Length: 253
Picture 1 (cartoon, rainbow, N blue to C red):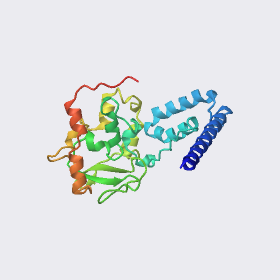
Picture 2 (cartoon, rainbow, N blue to C red):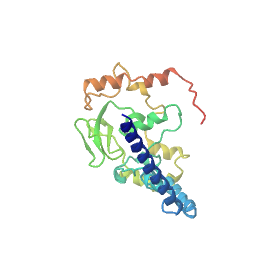
Picture 3 (cartoon, rainbow, N blue to C red):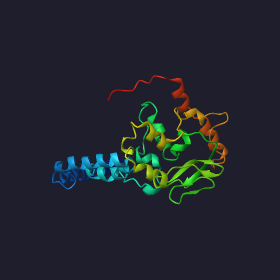
Picture 4 (cartoon, helix red, strand yellow):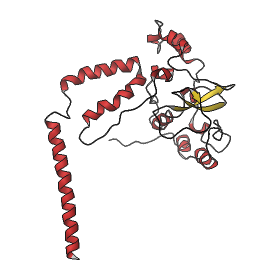
């Protein structure tokens, strides 16, 4: 029995030793500069990123992974983000980042999570018919899409008489608008914003519009969800928490 425990002790000691050697090697590798970024490059790189952010915020996230791979090479892994081709991305991403909701601290993370599978038009405009769409082929799908895919490749989009209501960046009307002199000041120019946003809802649809037991805004069955998943989505507790608790006390870190 003692020999068995002694053997386990040697095994654990060996594992700890190997782990320590790897950590020391990674740290030393960082000190000699292979995994460390030069401070001389940080300011120019940040300026380029800011320029990209101002030009096309939707493109910044694509660069985000590779930027952080170098800085966190020792112990962290940030995969690069694959996005659909720019010409098929939402025109909204010309001004907003892929995670655009930041006003409400208590539920912005949940809202941003929804941008992975809901087109902006689905919540910020009011429609009655919806379908999944492949943003690479720009074709409607019958049923649910594959689980693994590029970011924002498959989205739930609104329909009117079977026609998709989705403004993409390569849309001729949008491109012409983007060339106008007032487009650069679109945040402050009411007329330009109206031309870009159209009949956008002043108050976007809230969580309980879909996540409730009564008739919901989205027809989940027609979108390919089975009865069990449909029931789960309609009875989530998180949306009701947001409605019931108006004040949240967040820890100060």
